[in-house]
Each structure stands twice: as C-alpha cells, then as structure tokens.
Image (cartoon, rainbow, N blue to C red; front, side):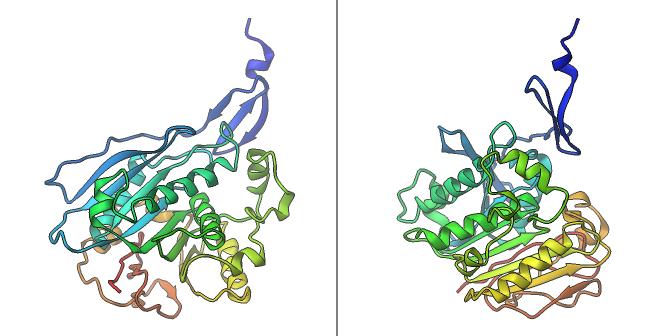
Length: 337
C-alpha cells in the first residue's frame, strides 16, 4: 500500500509545480529539449557550453553566419522565463526564439540554463546567471574557453534580456554589474519582457522557493531604490502587455527607475490586447511571420509606427525592438557604435 506521504500534497503552485509531503517535486510542465545545431550552412549555428562544472551550469551559444570575420558582433545574454522553476535554454520554444533574434539582429547570444527551483532554491538562478555573465566576460581578452566569443564578440556591446522570471533575473544581474566591475566588458542595455516583481499572488511561490528570504521587501523580489540607482547599464527597456497580470509590476518598475536617480535612459513599450509572453505563445502567427521577414533594420532604437503598440520616445544607438502593427513578437537589433 502506498504511503500517505507519497500522495499527500504539501504545497501546490499551479501551473508550475507541487511538492508532496515526502519531499518529491512534480512539475506541471516538462520542457521539450532540442539539440543544438553546429551546421556551418545554417543561418544560425548553436552549441552547448559548460559555464561551471560545479555547480552544474550550462548555456547555449548562438552565432549567425559570419560574412565579414573582421567585424565584431554584439553579445546578448538571455535568461528564460518559467517562474524560476520550469523552462530551459534548451527548450524548443526558447531555442527557436533566440535563434530568430540572432538571425534578425546579427548578434551572438548566450542563453543561460540556470538551475531551477525548488530543487535548487533561489538564489541559485541568480548566482548561475551571474556566473554565466562572468563566463562571457572571461573571453574579453580573446583567451576564453569558447572560440566563437574569442574571435567574433564585441565586449564593448553587451546586453542582457529575459522574459517574466528571466526579466527579474536580468535586473538582479544588472544590479550586480553596478556593484562589481567586469573588466573589458561594457553592459550597454537590458531588456525586461513582461517582468515579474513582487506585488502579486505569485509572491507566495517566490518566498517558498527562496527559504532565506527577507519577506515581501526582499530587494530581489521588490527592487530597492538604491539598487535601481546603481544598475550597471546605460539603457533599459521594459515591455508590458495590456492583458498581462504582471503589467502593473512592469509599469511600476519603470516609474520607480525614473525616480531613483539612475543616470541611464529607460523606455517602456506596451502592446495592447496582448497577454503574458505572447511572443513565445504565438511565434508563427501572421504578424510574427511578417515581423521576422522584415529586413529594414534601421538606426533607430525603436520603430514606433505601430498601430497596436504604445512606444515612448526613441533611444539612439541601442535596442531596436520591432513594434510593428499588431505584432505578436518582438526582436532586438543592435547598432554599431
């Protein structure tokens, strides 16, 4: 007869995971992993790398076709979403999405496969993502472990981005950059897509996944003004969606950052009628296909001709999100400096 502790649920956080009284964790969604593709004839090549053997942290590196070997490419370090507990850099959806960004923006991307909670309690995700950025920085002198970064990466143009929980992680990594220098590396911008920060029912799950927390005022959950003021980047872009339950968190972050005394430039983009991470949920819709087929990468930071997007002012020489008419996905471009 099966022990009652094997079937009794101690904690449940739908749609992410539940924990049984015997300590067993069951995830509601399992990531469908796809292998990398290092075919030199592909528009985007990818490979998996070890960031740290212990603790085990890995990443997937993406590189577009190189037409001019002498030209250095910007670097995007991407943190996936999934409530800190599900998802992967190797997930089919994220693999396709980051590949599309790399092909469209002509950048090198490093997609971080951080350890997931609750099996690896927070702050593992923050520490792993910081370790991944330091791994990227280890190539700045051209003698790091990965030849793609040694030869083709421009460490004067480094960007962070993430969606949902990954946006929260991106913020926290940017705070560390502001506190700790990364020799040879310049963090130009950060993009937070539908970011998760404290102030919703999701906080209960974050507090559970982070046993050594400081309550609802924990600065990793609710960004402190002093942390916002020392973000280690020049520009920050926040994306929110009208029907996203996290919309208010994103707009509050934007307003708080403007008032913090931070010396950088912050912008916000809102997509009307859209829900949380819609760009991942409908990557093949007509507008997404139309967006990905566009070739007019302009020197403007924003394309603000969107009939279905609210785009504030432009930032020169930074991110180039494609907020096209009724778009269901966005991409970022990076302009040479």
